Length: 109
Image (tube, rainbow, N blue to C red; front, top):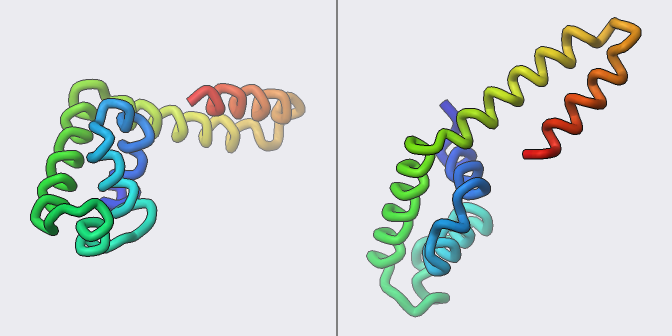
């Protein structure tokens, strides 16, 4: 299982447009900027409890969307398969072309 912060950041990358602007702000300050709940509360003019609840609700929403849509799971599976292809073609004459195409596919994510 991914570390919690890494998982939230990855889920955020996929599902942030579905969050409210305030939920996006709270998650960005907390997970991207490493602000404390008190700092976020002061900056947004809300209570620490409101920040806590906002974090909890936003993370819950991200997990619900992931459970329904599986975008992160599929992304991680594609990365794993791509890594295997790159490893398997490392010594083949066509390997450079194959690795280039695999990278193009990954860049589509």
